[in-house]
Length: 157
Ligand code: GTP
Ligand code: MG
Image 1 (cartoon, rainbow, N blue to C red):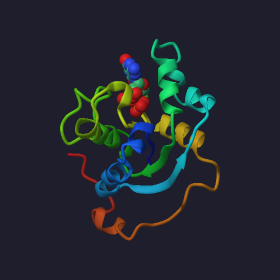
Image 2: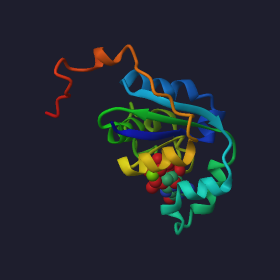
Image 3: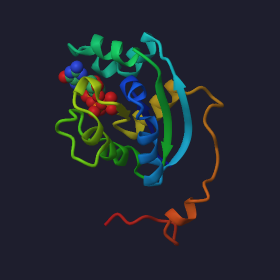
């Protein structure tokens, strides 16, 4: 099953949005596999955003991500990566649709409250980067049967 790495950035934690943001993924019906409050090093922030290392905003970005604790989460579900990106909304919160996390809760690209993996491969990479072995839980939610069609599949059309 697909997994995505979702992270509430330091501004989301400081602004008291942790419960609100977690709630959106819970209510959607994804399965929470890992969760922790964590103060990350500059090295880890640089590794996480390594694809952006040549961007002019890279030093500001890694300062931002290390400026306070973040909430690290691993969420699982069919299509979780793309769906979480939709729930999060556009990178620039002023362009993010109302109803999305960034559209509802943020105004600046450099303070956009939440991260979501941009591909299933990056989901795996980022979960391995932010969580140690043993920090993820294997469990079954009682909700799963009520989120699942009787033949076990989900409609794509
Ligand atoms: P993430 O989920 O955090 O990866 O955001 P994203 O996938 O929507 O955007 P992207 O990966 O391109 O950029 C990562 C993060 O860098 C963004 O979420 C912003 O916080 C920051 N960022 C991107 N572009 C800019 C920019 O032009 N200026 C500033 N200050 N920050 C930027
Ligand atoms: Mg990104």
